[in-house]
Length: 260
Image 1 (tube, rainbow, N blue to C red):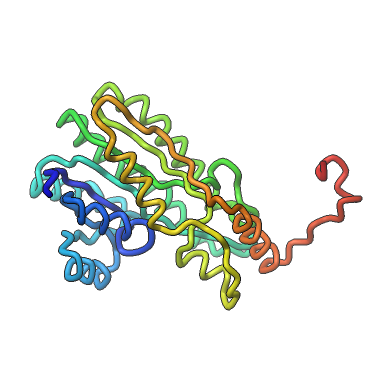
Image 2: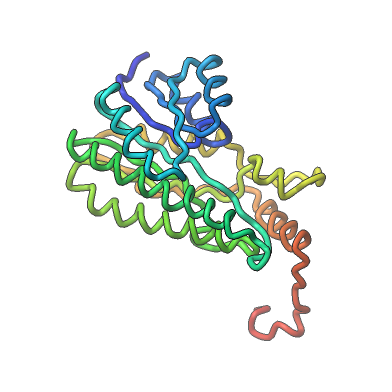
């Protein structure tokens, strides 16, 4: 089946981006996978026949150039799915400045610049759909994940606001906010801990993305909040962070109103 629709996916070499790219390819979309790991991109092309373009979205000066090339080669761009992201956790005072900058550059700045250039293309063609994978951390925050939470809150506000502007140009905007997802990020926090965290799988988020993208022309799913049905994982993940970084939870008797 050919849907004659071209979709760009950033962060397409692993996790949610990879699952989304493979699923969309299987149902007939023309998928262009964007990523910074050339070896993984080539593997994606060889295994699934997905078109690939090497792009590090933290290199903001390259984004407009690459997207212009893609536009000229493929014509209309029907969708942009922003899956590229970096998790950064730890005691704020101990985080290397360069890692903070990288997290902001990918999760916030680079994603904003991608949306900027693609929205211009979509405005000119008179249609399109921009979907951004954000996080429930944008709403709730994660202890020892201040920088990560701030970048997700920033891109969440950006997409919510740009939706108001692009609506008049027949361009849809959707925010996908998953809770805990079992990705390599979670594995790094778990280290050698084999506990099951009851999180979502990347495929679950990919299905939500495809649901939003498959709406007809008169409807738009502007936001999806996707939580694991078993919420134990959320608290277990925070407990792992607290244990890893030696957070001391006050006794309830000392909490006062905080414990209510």
